[in-house]
Length: 316
View 1: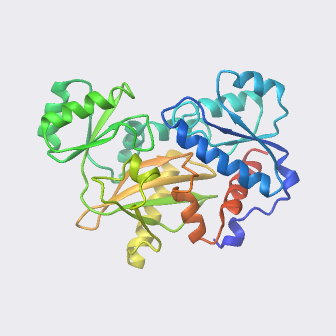
View 2: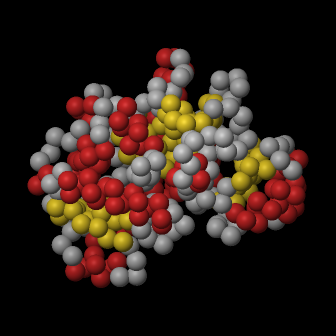
View 3: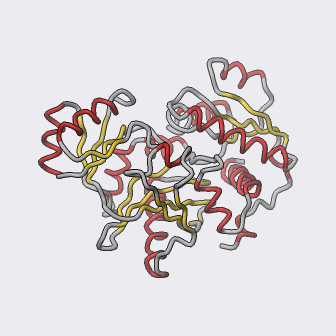
């Protein structure tokens, strides 16, 4: 699909009055504030009648009192990316951007996303669920080291840690459990990491990631100036096509809509391994979906208008 086809062909008046929902109460609040303000500024610059709502305790009152024709969801993490906001907007009869209730809830749950992929024969790293120190010891015996520990329902690498021994694994589990009652540990895949965005059913150019950190953590994502992004990603044409096809299958399995971003590792044998899918990816100056869109020929304003246009086509 060409950049012209991805772009919105709708007049801005077709969107009506758009509420940009950002902030919220999740652990990713600060990132969401940056993403939301960037989206709001781009929409207003394009002439869209858009205003922002920092989603807090007064949100239901704002929903009742404000005239809202459409919502642009830029809430990262729980409360915005997990199906709950999507369900509330469905009940209120307000069209919104991005994935629906089921896909949002599924993608937010890393364990169940992996189970869906495994059922379809899609490669994802071996894993275990941690609930105790004994679980940590069993996982170490079964999976070996190094390992990566993750809260099952967080994003932005919050609560994640790479570990190389049992004591570090137990400590990382205890830390991750502060963020989430369900903690995963995954086999570490040694090799390059890629992130691949989907927009309106099309796979955008993959981005290869590089960081001097032990993995692509919160600091590397949002704060560091030494993170490396490579577009084109450096893969052969055949391997890039394989990666894009895998991403499309992974997102289709989850049921994503409008826009999304998948994270994938490649091991030393060249095999790809699915890590997770984000249904409300970051939209900050360090974010990857805007970078991929730019490589496809869309600037930031054209990207947000395309996402908004998809909500019209999907939900009226």
